[in-house]
Image (cartoon, rainbow, N blue to C red):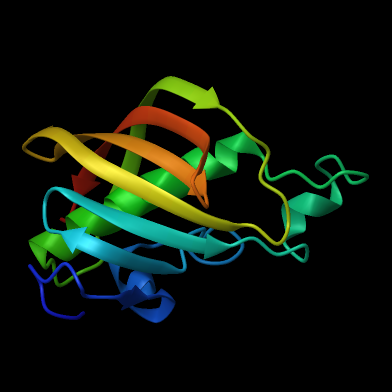
Length: 152
């Protein structure tokens, strides 16, 4: 997985598949960078017109659904936790809640999304995160969310 504790480590999509149970078309993170174990990381996704949600979500003006951007932020956070814990078996990551979600700018095909997540707190298997999604320097979406990590 790269050197844990090394912020310059890059985790590619094949490694992400070992961290998360998600698969296409519901795996929304293609790469992780800027990893600070247990604290923060940045996820990346190239938005392509060929993604299945664009066929039915504003087909005349393709816009990535905001809920999928929030899901991608949560996947980035889940991958950060599993990467940090160095869990052998892919755990179950359950989304528990979303707070303060805001959508600022439409995301369209051709955009390169960055998902910047920061751990706010954790108690046992329950984690709370802050996440912000950007295209370039423009904030597109943000929110706080919680998840439970089960590795049994």
